[in-house]
Amino acid sequence: MKPENEILDPYAEPDDTVAAELAVVRRVRAGTGRRILRMAVALVVALGVGFFLVRFQKSEANIQLASLTSDSAAEAPTVNVIAAESTDASQTLTLPGETAAWDQTTIYARVNGYVATWLVDIGDHVKAGQSLAAIETPELDAELNAARAKLNAAVAEVAVKQAQADFAETTERRWRESPKGVVSDQEREAKSAGKAEAVANLNESRAQVALQQAEVDRLTALTQFKDVKAPFAGTIVHRNINRGDLVTAGSTANTSSLYRLSSDNPIRIFVHVPQSVAAQIIANGANVEITNSDDPTLRLEGQVTRTAKEIDPASRTMTIEVDLPNPDRALVPGMYVQATFKFKGASAFQVPASALLFRSTGPQVAVVDENGTVAFRDVSIASDDGNMVSLGSGLHAGDRVALNLSSQIVAGAKVRAKEPPNVVAATSTLTK
Image (tube, rainbow, N blue to C red; front, top):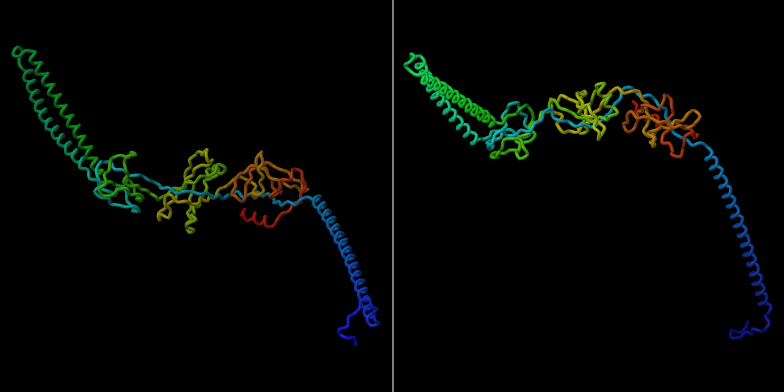
């Protein structure tokens, strides 16, 4: 054992034990370094192999993708098609309509005065000739009394003139029958002229009586308008008067109306029909079914009654009127309704709206023949309900029409035609 406080000499030769330990340490260090070096070399080799494998796989994938892209580009594009079929001669068209009163009038006062009382209110059903209101007319009453007094005076004047005429006639007869030489011819002629003047005065008085009688009759007729009456049976839709209101005769812009009266049985329905089907509806007397989305139970049948016989240049539509009985007043004027017309249309081919192509020359469709060649045809639209379009010309039975055709496909291009089951089913459902 060496003493604990012994100082080691670094230049002293190691003994055998220390030398052995140092040799072991050197061998361990040398072995560890070789292992680390071998592991590093293996890791580098593995990374290199993996890198080349990944590059190889990516290259193969790019080659396959290029090959698939080339094949896909060379292959004809797939296009959905549908066979054009002739539509049924019976067609249905639903359009919005508006109800209107059969008769409607605004009632004004015919005399000046003030409202004594009103007898009906809005919503009341009245009969023809029924009293609606009473108007007090003090000025008219005074004018009528004055006219009657003038008439009485004119009648009295006639009596005076009649007496004068009778006296003139008697005098003229006496002088005319007198022997010659008793009275002069001048006096005889004067009495004859007096008679003629008396008769003329009598006729003037009688004419004055007739004039005064006419004035009394006029004022008497006006007094009948103190009682405001309904001109026809209907419903009061507006009341614009109250007790004590001053009213003025007439219907000018400065006068107020008393009532508005509407008759809604039967009732009119106005529909604006497009020009493309107006002629067919008129010629065949189309049946009309009236419905209302607010009342699913409402369903009335009618026919076209009359038309405006002109096309509105602004909307290119014709106004058609349908008259319907309305005893229970299920329809009221001003309602929005749907009018479904059922009529016989011209022969046409029906295709989905997605088949139409709108070009500068007009509407077209793309037709795919048996060889898959695309051709474009000009067509004319007979009718359009939004989902399906009826074409009046341009197609033949059995033509296969392309749907949603890409703008990159031109005439003469080759395509693969495909009929989607869902499109066929939807088309058959819409056709029915």
